Amino acid sequence: SDAAVTEDAFEAYQDLLQQANVYDFDDLLTETLEEIKKREDAPKFLHSFSYLCVDEFQDINEIQYRLILEMNRYGKQLFVIGDPDQSIYGFRGSTAMWFQRLRNDVSEIRQIRLRHNYRSTPEILRCALPLISKNAGDRRVLEACRASGTPVLSVAAPDAFAEAVYIAKKINSMVGG
Image (cartoon, rainbow, N blue to C red; front, side, top):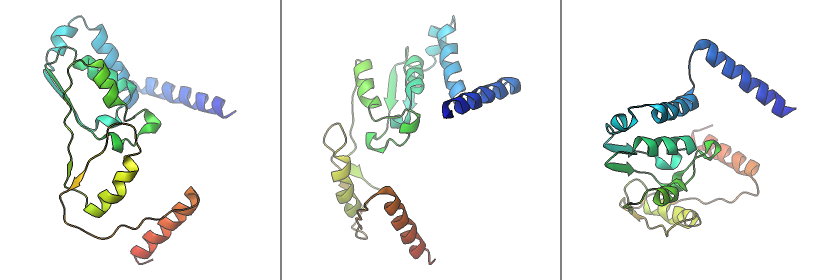
């Protein structure tokens, strides 16, 4: 079965890591969290993190969330920045809900919403806002700070394959293919 192949591959991978005496990225996170929790000098060690800043907060996963809270346990300030509408790593556990979970888990939260968009033209924001407004959470307000630009082309495709074919053909025509 596919599950057996996947399990066998995972076990072989873990064996190779152990033989090489190395960790992969997930192991580094897990081992760091476990090491912090079992340190006898954890309060002293964690006091060295007075100010903790986390960028792209929407892209973290469960173990990263727990590590952030643990590292900030004795901290003075935790500053997270991110855009819940730009969470793109759902396949590895990221979700826009980390912001709400942080509000539930940390007693004193001050939220600052950035409304001014210096990257996108008004045309892009007019197309994007109705889409991201369907996401859970507060009402989205974005103001373009750039001048008007090229009109945005909106295309509806009957399925993902037709959408991919259209995009490939469009790119091909734009690069002169």
